[in-house]
Length: 193
Image (cartoon, rainbow, N blue to C red; front, side, top):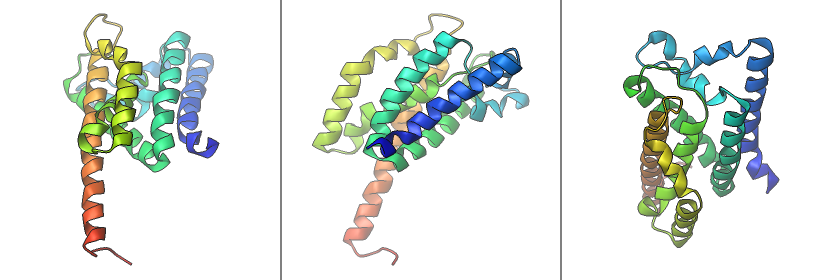
């Protein structure tokens, strides 16, 4: 069981390591490696931004949800966690780079919203009672985070939240269709040996 939780623990641990390195060695200047929309220098931020946090409070808040939602996803299937994490970082970060407002966007929030969107919409694309139960639990337990997609503060990347959420839904659709296609191939005997 603990082995299934290692991927989200490693992800959260990486955020903490980067935070302390940034704070202790670089006087928080690594923040400039976040996503800066429509600047070529901001493109690497697509990969770096989930690991960069502006404050201890920001990091703690994201760590809790990374561990809970990421843990649920990883407990389902660690490989699925890895795929959704990579896909979520690239897709939400890419959308943010193209469509976000001009600012440095940092933090794991877009990835958290991706996890939430993925888990909450799974029942729509994979019609199984377990997925319905999981989706309802996520929506009831964590649906309040959807307020984060409303522009309320210049310091909050509501666009990152929105693009993360939409990325999670898109990934749930894509992964469920890949699984369905694989199941059809197996049933029809079209599989590699």
